[in-house]
Amino acid sequence: MELLKRRIAEDGRVLSDQDLNVDSFLNHGVDPELVAAMGREFAGRFRSVSATRILTIESSGIAIAYATALELGVPLVYARRRKTLPHGGEYFTERVPSFTKGIVSDLYVAKHLLTPEDRILIIDDMIAGGDAVMGAVRIVERSGATLAGIGIAIEKMFQPGSDRIRSLGVQVESLARITSLADGKVEFM
Amino acid sequence: MELLKRRIAEDGRVLSDQDLNVDSFLNHGVDPELVAAMGREFAGRFRSVSATRILTIESSGIAIAYATALELGVPLVYARRRKTLPHGGEYFTERVPSFTKGIVSDLYVAKHLLTPEDRILIIDDMIAGGDAVMGAVRIVERSGATLAGIGIAIEKMFQPGSDRIRSLGVQVESLARITSLADGKVEFM
Image (cartoon, rainbow over all chains, first blue to last red; front, side, top):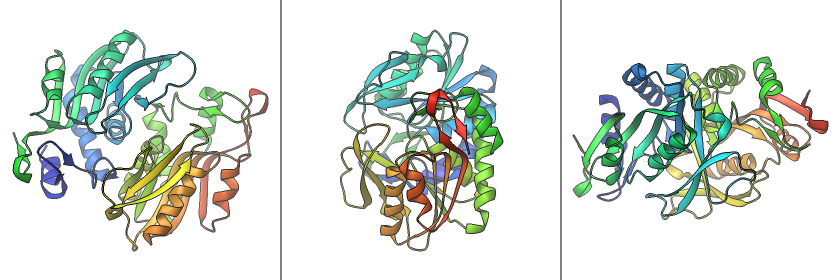
């Protein structure tokens, strides 16, 4: 998606050969017009998978996933992330490490929000190690729902998450595929 | 806003005389059409305050704040919440307790995302004790920006946050004003 790649080139900050900071327009500061365009792009690419629900992970996936859900006309659910689980047992939970935060946390989704009849499209802002998205995939599996596809705004292809999600056998789409962050430069595929 | 009040009456769950759970449509599960309508409603009520930026607090304010920002054509920033601050000092930070989570956390906003020229509209999903919103207000003050207004989707008027934000001298709008959750029933003003 040229609009996103141009914005990354202009306003993304390469923090290291592993880390790209996009907090001025995507996951702290948010450019609503850009995000709306991303939602339209995801909706177009995934219209044929007939998703019944969008799943993302708080917090940085929420705006993009909401824009996609609005465009596709289906509800959204975002997995919550806590170090301690809420009381009561009516949750699907998965423990995941976080590449960017360096901590372990629990993802959870209320059971009443995922049903075996659902076809789930997972949307997230960026993939690095892929642990959070893989945790969301396991939650989908445990709910009995069908995984219909995975959409990632920014895919760092040189980190493990890229291969992990592409081996799942579902449609995967990313809007900006980055092959390297070496020497302070963003290289797109 | 009748649409929101009707949805609260139908799908909100009163957990106690202090707690209302709206996780099936607003802050875990999200109904995109409802949230888009809330964004239009906030945009209409606040158009005259000439906000240059929307500020919310992760995670549950993000979808509503995004919808409002898109409608008003201004950027969004969401304060992040951490128990430990990120490295580097380029952040406005405020320590706040959380009524619902029972923990203390730090809100932070990157300094480059708030400028003294900004007119900030704060949007959040629900107000109870008001600590998170008041933390956001202090961040606005410290940035030198002007607080232009506060919009709350669901205002629990019998808890302290309601009076706290209404004593600030700025326009405050809420879309559903709840006067009581006693006896398992939601009473609207």
